Length: 417
Ligand SMILES: Cc1ncc(COP(=O)(O)O)c(C=O)c1O
Image (cartoon, rainbow, N blue to C red; front, side, top):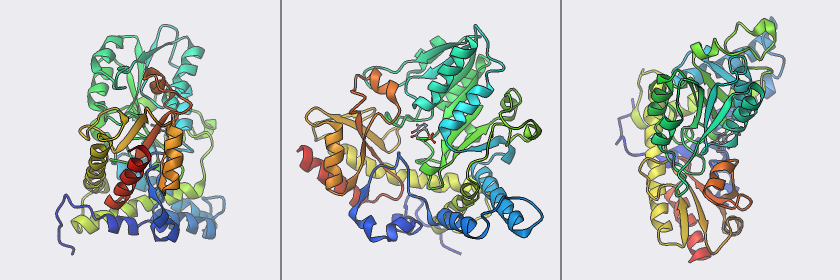
């Protein structure tokens, strides 16, 4: 049995060995900082994906062994995601993306929304958790209210939220952390306040989950969505729906599947192999856990919470070095200029260089980062940032190293210094 190591130490070299990408020569050319766009997939996921396509790419479930094995692999993918999240399998809908999941969820709410009802969306959110609700409000006659950000720094203030809440509020939509601002929002407080007025609370965890695996039991959200192509997996969206919320939602599937809670909001299942491959995420977290903490018979969701915590600490320690360097450069950091209460995902603008020039100049120096509004269009507008050029976004994953960070800082310094 492996000895317990210093629990604050994250073995990034070991983590990188879990990704085929870092074994390729081309990986050495890049310090990769577009992780908020999508992370690399870990090898245990890629192996399961390849195996499914090679061995069992048939219509799943059935008497023949090929079909039965395909179904078993898909069941394993669903089961493992549920175990990682510590929730019953039936509470999870797997869709092609979070945008699609929010869209389906909002349409499924149309049955109980009527004229006079109110929906609150945050201005900090990605368009996927705003536009869908805006369309549904237009069609049902419900009123859409924006929880506006502070125009100085893009932060959400609870006092503003409380002013919007009332007995007519039926749905509250907010992000766990914005893909631009990076502050971790007080979701427990938001759900508590929303519930005290009888509203359902829908959380976008897409930006948060890659940095820190969500603890759904503590958040008490009615719906929580994230995308596995940003958490080292295949390109899918996971949507948790609390059972009493699911009971209120109009099925979006074939009528004869409507009694299956996990199929209720699944009009057409996404890529079967990608669902099966999600089981590889369990192996990935388990391997990292065993390496750092040794064998344990704890439940998988408790293990992922512990390992994810030191992955997050590792990212934040690198992000701290970056922020310190940015403070010496002529740039404006959007959101908090410290790591306290934020995720390792920094957006910035410069007075001297466009964001697009920064991104292209960095690429020439072997640093991958992008510019744009990243579909968080409304918050950029509120901050008075040109939505065409947008921000330069520098986002970490646990597999980034100090060396990557220094390459990024050196490159930025030579471009801007
Ligand atoms: C914060 C946030 N929410 C939602 C989405 C949409 O996710 P998907 O691409 O799975 O539709 C994204 C995508 O970048 C995002 O960053």
